[in-house]
Image (tube, rainbow, N blue to C red; front, side):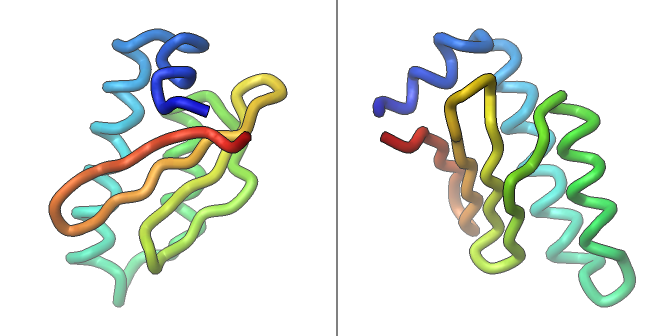
Length: 87
């Protein structure tokens, strides 16, 4: 499934907003992981995106979630954000 399917379903602006927030969460986790509850990061993603998380990982920093019936993922590395869907 092409990554742009995510954009087709929710629109480019919403995808950009979700990606920006997830990058913010990644950066914050890098600085605050010793002090903050990872569960709060999950709640923040769900609140901003509007989508229920299936799974969220610390390493790699990744979230898996549904948009309607389709499952998508976002993964952050130290240099970039990647996203896509599952076939």
